[in-house]
Length: 338
Image (tube, rainbow, N blue to C red; front, side, top):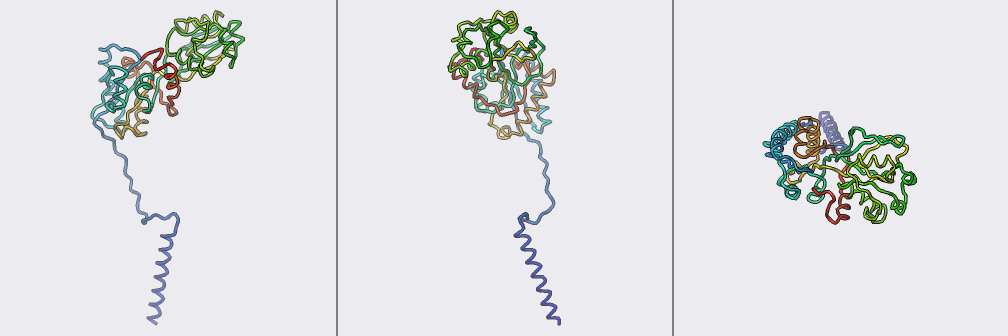
């Protein structure tokens, strides 16, 4: 009897072990090793020696005023980066001597990030990621019953476009979106005397009308600024007006076209330091720079360094195709030089 019970017990143990083995090996969701308590490792701060941000503004800035702004702005940025978990021994902000030197420092990795005008970016740093941009000056207009009224500038994205509008003259009212180049060539055009708007207008004309440019329009009147163009359009003295503008209302205003987007400043980063090339740092840097722009004192310091308008994070990946096309069309020169 004892032998019989021993045999039964042995068979039971073998069957149990076989069942366990089958469950462990064949179960589709089973781990390779028996599950244990989850081991959680909270991410610690990223500690690095230094972060160098260089600025090359779109305009010349007063040297003594710039030097005064550099140190406190760097301290503010260092504190914000620390809040994001990036601990730098030093955070230094410098001013570039020229667009070329800033671009070469960025691509060569001797600076970690740069705030430059977009022309400098496309000429010297194209290919590096653009995280934030700022919009150039523009005019916001309200158009009602043929009258044009300037409004205070509202919040807008970090870019502008140039609008091509038919004015309230008799001939202007006959124009519409998609009109032929021959019809446009008969119109009197009001355009800015200078500025990057002309480059983007030429790019729009070239794309829409098989390589034509402003030089192919025989009736062009250069004007000093938006106010003069707005008054001329309202009085019917011109047929087409070119404005960097957002518009609201206006049954008498007909938009004939809109150029590609253009920008004032761009925040771009180097990939020389691996931790700073990661998307997590890019997002953190955007939050820090947005916080600086929202801080009245810090924004004042940025303006003293040549960044006139707040930076806005891009909602989509930056595409330099329009800028590259314009550079090719202009033969490597810009109407407005950096």
